[in-house]
Length: 262
Image (cartoon, rainbow, N blue to C red; front, side):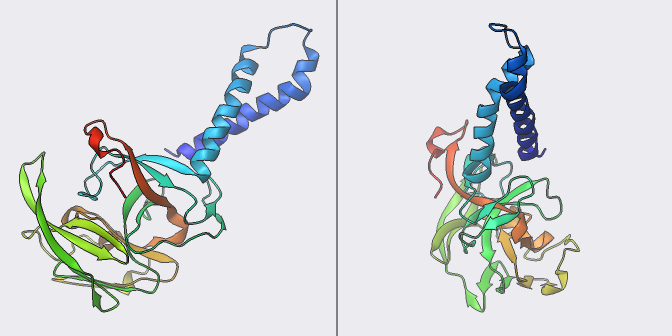
């Protein structure tokens, strides 16, 4: 469901009702006559819908985490806020950038439109920038020939399945974050799509090597062995970017998580 498009249509409809009543219909009604119900509701809802549309389009948009691909950073059920202007001002609905602000950086947690189905929003971590050479071999990440720092941390307990997963602290650029790597899971990548710039990637029994094309980004989930990401469906083009995740504002199952994401 394209919520931005729905809001845009509602803004047009309620705005048209308000304008029509303000400049024409009000003058035709007898003095003291009650507004028709459709004028009353349309005109009263217009400023509210317009404010929500502008805030959601240009400032911050809420999202709910639907899967465990970003565990342990983000949990299923986390409600997060996404900064809509940090990567540039984009026109709502068509998502066309009209003002350059900042570019995504390694380590950012970014929401984007899934390249294979732009009606779906995905959230992953930025690993590769345009021109980067990314290597994920035997579950170790290398960028431009330099191994990404990785430090072992305490094992992560999955509270639902009651098993432990090896946890590490990875440093991407200036961002330290936790990742999970399951020792028993295969290192190879299977069921790879025929995505654009597929020839930029080379797969083998231990993983994948890719060169990120201009204007694209290589994304990975923090739950490395339980994430469908750029290793499987390719690169994220700049025009698919929605914004940068920066805050957990609610979780019905764990109120302590509010504000815990950084």
